[in-house]
Length: 192
Image (tube, rainbow, N blue to C red; front, side, top):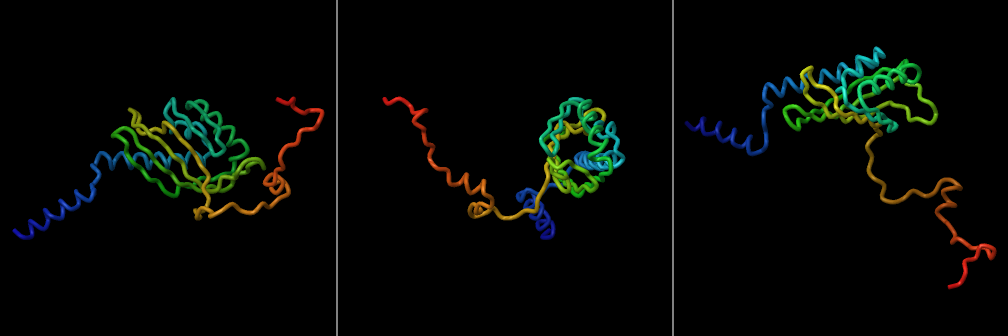
């Protein structure tokens, strides 16, 4: 009898601490969402824009690393195809971590960490090496699809600075010591 009370007490403690075992259906859904991420890497690495876009809902949207917003599966496919022509023609995407949180039985948020090699970006664009995607996924008749996607480059986490760094260039120095504007006599404002 004492052993029974200890077990019941342990279970009550687990429930009170917020511990829960995911239901089998939720475990299956999480596995399906993780498969979406494996399919994302496979489609990317085969440079298959159609397969990549088919991971999105028909009305899904995507915001890439530089803030370009693509709306709808056809536009996502077209833009990814354009990227595969040059910039990402030799790129390889690796998914390194997936964290899934369910908002409802048919809606989930996934944070997807990734690394990339082989991208050839122009000088005015950041090179994608490591980042994190924020995805909102919805469960549809055909399975889990990405409804919304935001991609962000990552940098190594470091503490916030305790002050502003000293200026390092002439323009920075000049802008930090702005003299009050002077009005020439030709442009003087009337008194009053």
